[in-house]
Each structure stands twice: as structure tokens, then as C-alpha cells.
Image (cartoon, rainbow, N blue to C red):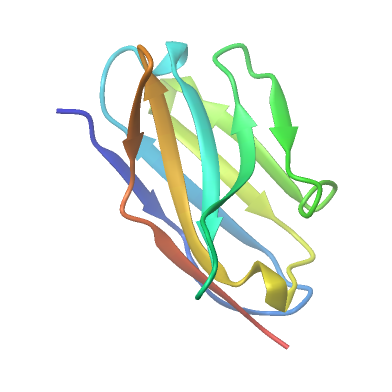
Length: 115
């Protein structure tokens, strides 16, 4: 059973920062691609960032330059450092693990940015 657990969400003022964490189970974590998605109220879930097993990263245009995705394979954890947060960043943030072409989602963590 693969488990993916997000943490680190909360309430922050516009311009502030948060760091989300996503811990995954399994000894093959270093071979997994990891991504962050988010879903705002009344909107579809959207892709935010991805990091491959080789640590190549890519970002949605809406967060490029403000968010940084990274991974610590020794801790089976991926991070999303979010800086210069805006009210539009308010959403539930989900972590996605892709292992052997199977997707595993976490339960999500709420991020609320007040103006």
C-alpha cells in the first residue's frame, strides 16, 4: 500500500511564505516522479510543479519564480517552497506520486492566503 501524506498548509498573509511537505512510503521513492497540484473552490484541479527522479523541475506559469519544488530521497519527501504568496494561491494542495505508471494522491493540505 503506497501512502502519500501532505503537511505544512495554513493561513498566511499575502507576500508571505509557506513550505509544504509530502512524505511517501516505499523504498523506490528515488525512482518516482513527484508533482504538486492545487484545487481552488469552484475550480478544477490544476498542475503546479513537477520534479522527476533525476531532479528535473518544471512549473506552471502562474507560480514560476515564486515556488520551488525539491526532493530529499533519504527522507522520501518532496517539498514545495512557496514565496510571495497571493490570494489567488488559496487552494487545497495535493501531492501526486507516480510509480511504475500508477498515480497515488495524497489527501491534500489547505493553503489560505489573506489579502
